[in-house]
Amino acid sequence: MCPEPELRLGPIGPESGEGVHPVLDVATLQRAHVVACAAVELLELAVLHDDDVGLADGEAYPLASVVKLPLAIAVLREAANGSIDLAAQVDVDPLTRTPGLTGLCRFEHPARVSVEDLLYLAVCVSDDTAADALFERCPPALVTDLLRGLGITEITVRHSIRELHETLASRLTPDELPQALALAIQASTRGGGHLIPQLDVTHANAGTSRALVDLLERLWSGPELAGQREPVRRLLGMNLMRHRLAPDLESDDAEWCSKTGTFLHLRHEVGVLEHADGSAFAIAVLSESSVPARRQPGAEQALGHAARLLHDQVRATRSTR
Image (cartoon, rainbow, N blue to C red; front, side, top):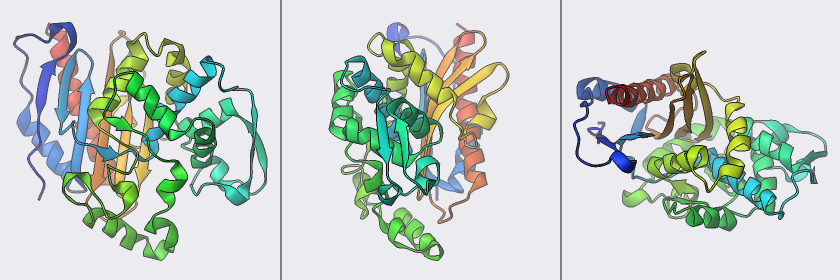
């Protein structure tokens, strides 16, 4: 049975004092939450800009490939400091590649790729081998140090993508994958623990939707990441994974720049929706499926629908001011 959604609506920033704001259409949102819960047990979603609306947005989740967002920011920050050369050529050996479905993970022959092109592969096609080549030059501890320097404490990067794959999923045949999915769903403990270490938020790359939105806001509008803003925005805009939130959010008048994350029962997406009128909304959706199946189009649609509901509510709130 799905829990009742935890709802928050309120401004952040200089207008965070007392005020009157439209109330969420709770009945509509609960219906969307129930639809999502048919395939997604826990839905964590935050929409922030001048306002704050969220469902359980302080709860940490394993990040899966969403970790490539702070990784990309850290690599570009190191490049700006002169510690990394974006034009440097990196040799990739297929014998030591990270398991994955895209990019260099599928290469059958040795390749040489620049660091800057590794960024494109890691972010835009979610290439796990490319991401790990970047982690070799910008270790997880360095990425976490960058986040702490920004004042972001609810995102922690602890390991490479290869370590994420070193679970039962990598040791089972395709026919046995439902067993891995069932274990991923059933083996969690209270407080975010899990029998699979890479799904335990105290051992995994982990973060909250609130912190991810904070990172996106700093990237889009804060002075700390001004040098990384345009290159990361460009990469997120070229993301080829458009099946989750994009169908409900983007249009000819709204550009969705995002990074997805998918692993076992995890389905995530974080990004910024930029409207033609100049408004922009940071959105983070982190979810865990309660159904042991890899392909769940209904879950993808439900997440997109819930994101759209909250986006529309926040945008309507801003227009009434």
